[in-house]
Image (cartoon, rainbow, N blue to C red; front, side, top):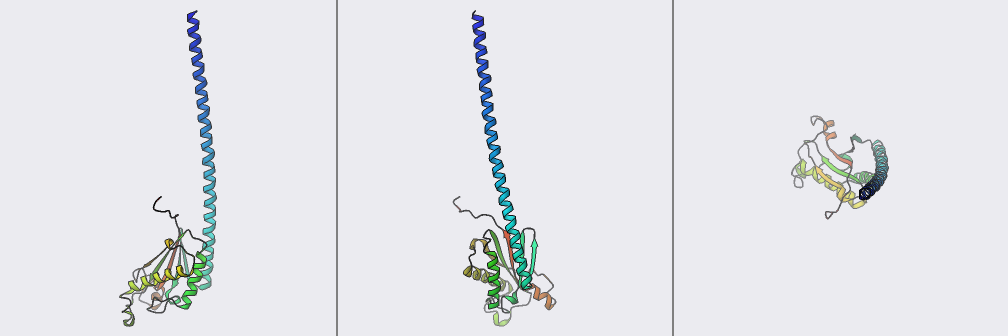
Length: 211
């Protein structure tokens, strides 16, 4: 009799254990299924955001392309970066970093295109030919590097003063004569080298330093 009681107790514990295992496995399965559903939702959201970003990028490129065709200036697309090249003569007088009225109109058009796209990084780069600064301008600019930097900075300052652009997304740099597009041995080549460039690339969200 005691033997049967022991067997019954063992069977009862075994059944309880198996039932507990089954319940535990069911709970684990339900948790995994919930995680899969969450991941599918996150993936769908990422795909939607990616499609929206790709659509905006295509629209921005189309607008910049239309502007470059209207104004007959060069546009280059390099991977995710769009490079807009504006000859210096359309923005500045010779040897000067002061923006002309024609240049202001040109920069206003560029800024108006960029305003609806606050997520983009915009780097303004100034370039010159290899001719020395004329004596009448040497009291303001020691060399072409200084002139090209002043021009880039003035472009950024003007655009920020007149348009709703994020200053954290804009930067200015001067390269002087050191990154030519063409030979400086001809007047045509020097004219190509005197330019202001906009490097426009998708940027990353800016987070506070405290995060």
